[in-house]
Length: 150
Image (cartoon, rainbow, N blue to C red; front, side, top):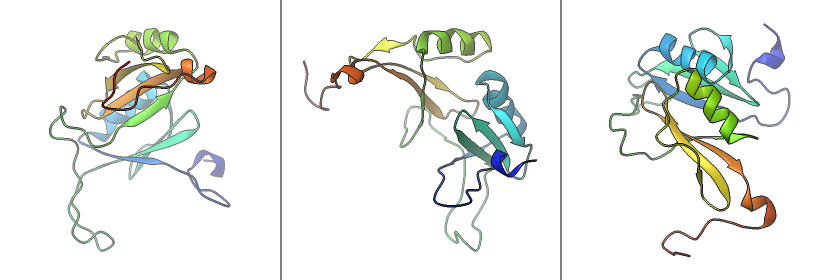
């Protein structure tokens, strides 16, 4: 394994995303086989490189010395979300076709939101993933401010 395959910067900061998963093998397959990521480390923790970022996955568990009052667990209610993965793509229609053909189940097809085209998919644990393509924002057209219309 090469150092550049790991999320381990030689200088500065590198952002990764950690997911608490129920079944590491199932999640690893989703992010590699369905979404096209590269498995860097199989387990303990599982690391998948996806485009220019990394996902780190491990099962949940109780408190540890460095997080003494924190328990990790996957989402319990898919209708209530406090954070989600946001993946930006160059061609959302191609991405939608390709990932759907590999088994991804999107909530809807891509929808034009003026500033962008976007749709959502869930991973095997129910994590919400936004897939978006910048369109209008590239020409100065942005989304409406929440709570307004027009």
